Image (tube, rainbow, N blue to C red; front, side, top):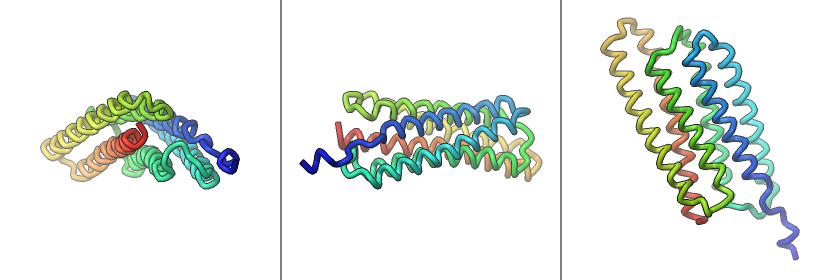
Length: 208
């Protein structure tokens, strides 16, 4: 009798999907920021708004977790997944803020490519999270995780090439330092997406 009275699923999968949609939205803004650098302020403001909404989703997730006795997946996995998705939004915001603070005046082709990879990773995160409520999709989730891993490796390759190009071709040390920092932040976004992929893989292996 008591078991039937305990709250079970809460709204965790809804929160995950809401969080993932915000990651995609922020990734799109970052890609647009790099493609249309003259519109930097507008896109940066949107990224900031999205990050704040992500904080609210994280807060609601944690509140629900604290008052839910029986959860659809392991409590620690819920906490880790919510936190990892929030980390992606935080890094996208950090990147936009750093561009402003460092007074970066334009986007290089390498920065544009890294931003595009960030968006592709964000879309794969959303795809994987959207299937998490049904373990019949286990193999599809694992395939998405593999694609995120591939994209992260591509971003790492692009970043290393971009930094090497800076050291070969950029005569202004200040510009070199600024751009290197932006490249590293963008690549770190894909690292955080890979963290989400690793969590999703763990959930699938535990529950499928």
